[in-house]
Image 1: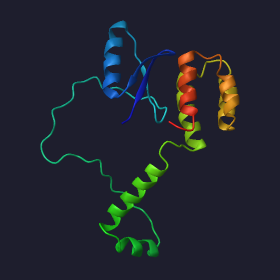
Image 2: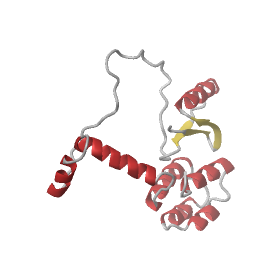
Image 3: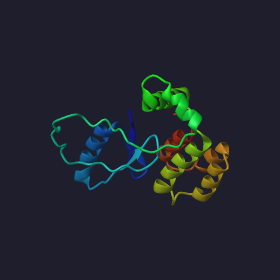
Length: 167
């Protein structure tokens, strides 16, 4: 399940699923506050649709399947042809197995881009932002933590959470 964190300026006001974010934004609206809602997996700002959900449509549910082209060598296609369930089913199983195998670990590049997405949108004017960014992209995690130590607590804690190897 995708989780989110909502900020009012530099303070966390809500954590949870999209329903929690919608509730937090509706609560903030009478005060004239527009929350920044971040995807905890990507560090990206997400928009919240406050309109009422449309009634469910009739017919077969959409499964989110996307058809895309992949390129494999002939030996790969030969191997896939001999597998149970067809090429698509085998590829889905292989991808799912890799997702499970690597669950909880993220590459340095992913940690950097996720963290930078967050800090650049919320903290570009905070002290030592440029130096913290340099440390982040140099894999100097201790230097990064040191540079953001004076930032508002919620911003600092969320940035450090995004920068951790495990999520």
